[in-house]
Length: 132
Image 1 (cartoon, rainbow, N blue to C red):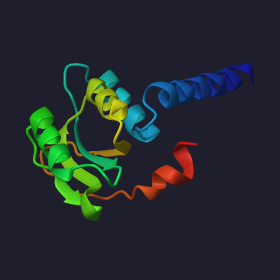
Image 2 (tube, one colour):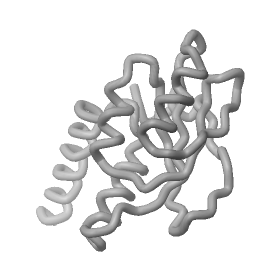
Image 3 (cartoon, helix red, strand yellow):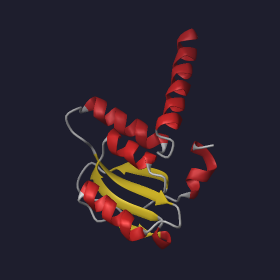
Image 4 (cartoon, helix red, strand yellow):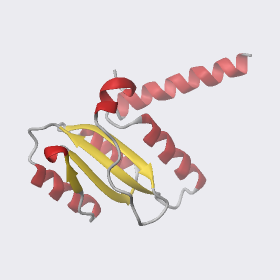
């Protein structure tokens, strides 16, 4: 039974590190990216990335930022507070997004290829669960 307790303790510690260092990134996205990188360390996996921002942000500046970082033109939703785009994802890019003062939350879904399905998350998930 002590082995199971150790797994739970280490898991809680890992989640604490996620909250400290990547507080705006959904933990499921971090875990999924780390697992895929572990299995294929030489390939950055392709994701649909969704970024939620504060309402007062200049949506054209955010759009330009995303294009400059990824080369992808995001779709913009929810009156300019929700950006969705497909790109190869790195932990470094997640850190950069998490550190942006106007970013509220970041979600992502593994796509496996170049095609995407479009925006699918709601920023209210952020308010009810994974960040206190």
